[in-house]
Image (cartoon, rainbow, N blue to C red; front, side, top):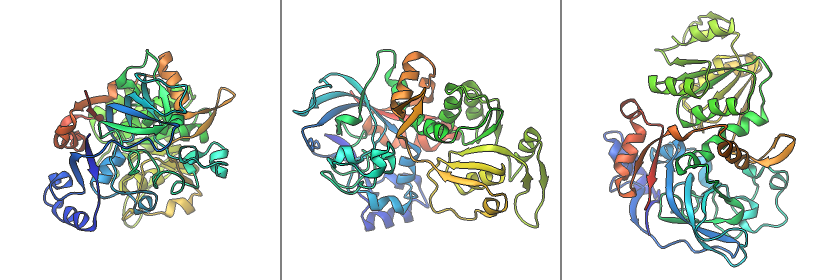
Length: 408
């Protein structure tokens, strides 16, 4: 099959790091770890797996970090190489294993990509999987498949940047007729945003700051409104088109980043806080937002999240922050912030029941409670991957949100 294959050998890693300083195209060029090629179809690892023919394969912010070779090195301990990237998917079942009785060839599906105990044939499951926190599985490197946190980061499964991939039947969700392919591609990032909001529900009347106007930030705004949380939502974004979308999805206020800390004035006014200037660096806000969802992962966005959250407030990192330079962590201890991370999704309590995050999101989409189809802005065939990556990395010029590969 045709696919993009990621194989970060030391020579390719070094060559790309060096040449990317002069040209972004080096990130997917002849010497880069990512190559457009033909690879064998991945076999079904066990009889309770299925093959999915890809229709749409999304390009996520974490994928762009991978191309830039900026992703956390910690995750490489959970990864097997080489792999076909792509963990956001819409497809059609092309083959079912002998033990799969509830799925049929031809069904339109989306796939939850996490590879915990259930997918690895590990029984009994680890303590985290048994509790519904399979995003925190203790066995991501064990079992009948190679190490990998997700489909798209495991050499045995393939990914949605290829013509087909394999998935355990527990990962596969048939799509309701009311949910278009474009909307279904946003199921995974919306679940990423819903998960921390259900685990860290803001109190009534709170001010929630969403830092970042990309897909996850927009999904966070949409998730707050879909959850019908009685809070004020402030979106802090980089570009005007992101501010417009945030307001469309339900933000009460959408602010653009200013030079330095110029945007701090608006947050101070909104929250009744006061600003003080230190000897060096950005101003200090005394006061601030009650809950901040950081959806970028950069040094600037993390520092803003820490400085714009009130004393005793909470900051949740969704942006896959890795090795950050220049972040002053003083606000964490000085104002006793609760700082926590959030990784993908799991089993949540919703409407008095325990349900998987992806199930909740699909139900909302089918009922018309949330519509994220407008976030899918650009489609490319797989062989146009240079244009796809250029579009995804050039938001100021392209006004892109979700960029995806289209097959067939």
